[in-house]
Image (tube, one colour):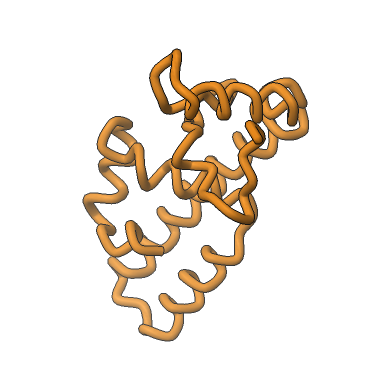
Length: 127
């Protein structure tokens, strides 16, 4: 079967999300291999790049994750109580669009604003 089944395999092994508008998914593998074909098929069948609600949700999630990470850093830098910092992390981990967060972690070395945030909060790489 070509369709990627997220219950049985990690879609991020096959797909990469652009973290700039329009927040499209792309196959990670090179053309002319099964992994590329599966990714392209999944993107097309599920219309992952052709539904405005999905694109807008990904953009909103990116901005929200970035803002929450900044809030965490500000609290940590002001020496907030450990339980308050843990509450921020817990809230962070309950946010929607986890794929966006995982891509932010994966691509943080390639995007200057993310690199700066993760350099200040390397612990966020494990959230």
